[in-house]
Length: 143
Image (cartoon, rainbow, N blue to C red; front, side):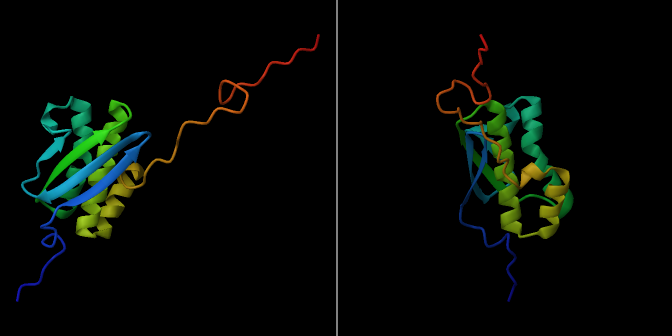
């Protein structure tokens, strides 16, 4: 009897999310040939820097564990374009770590860039009560 590996068990679709600022990326993972679709478009139609950012986790995976056998369908909403790309990148890396269960891959991502696995927790500072801006102080008059 053939022993199943973790990648063979993922015949069903898997949904993983990634967040950056207010952008939320929902990634649907299925078996395939390594195609990546970003908001229903193939990743090749993105500009150069965005395409490279999306491909970073995939290249690290191929360097560490070999060829890729999954298709990625990423739907991103909210935030700006850069935050959407970073959220998608986070979702791809998390999905690859989850389906393989590889600690070697996780450490490779963390050593390359911590934000590939760990979500950036920085948020906009809230406005203070009675003032207009988060950091501005009321002016004082001495005369």
